[in-house]
Image 1 (cartoon, one colour):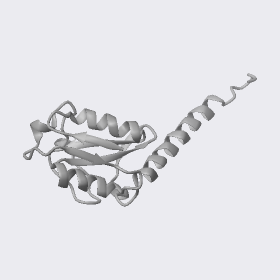
Image 2 (spheres, one colour; image 1 turned 60 degrees about the vertical axis):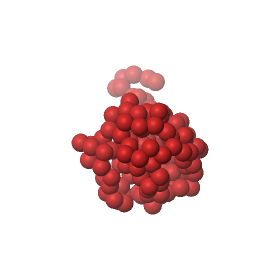
Image 3 (cartoon, helix red, strand yellow; image 1 turned 90 degrees about the vertical axis):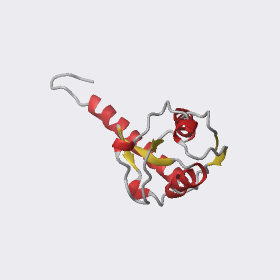
Image 4 (spheres, helix red, strand yellow; image 1 turned 180 degrees about the vertical axis):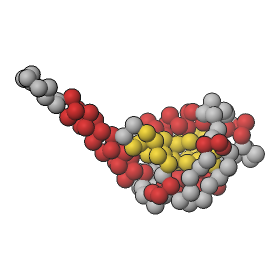
Length: 139
């Protein structure tokens, strides 16, 4: 996938493009960078309606190619090095989103699949719970 990044791009546009390609992953933007395997503090999360030009010190435009076999840490590093954007990737875990701190060496394809599997299992659990028999009642 390719994401065009320039001063008039909103963080939400990047998030939507990313999540359209990786529906069980999401990307969040922060005012402070983090190291590999570290989490990002919610206190520093940037509102998604902000334009890139309003938060970047350097105004570099370009196209970011994000491949399914890219590692989480590589994607986060690329955003930081090329565009001065601190990002944290999240993986869907049932009904919540978990930062990918312990899985920075996994590929986007692998993590998206883990998120899908987690969500599928959760759907099956809900379905199975709905099938429990009530005493004296036939299904």
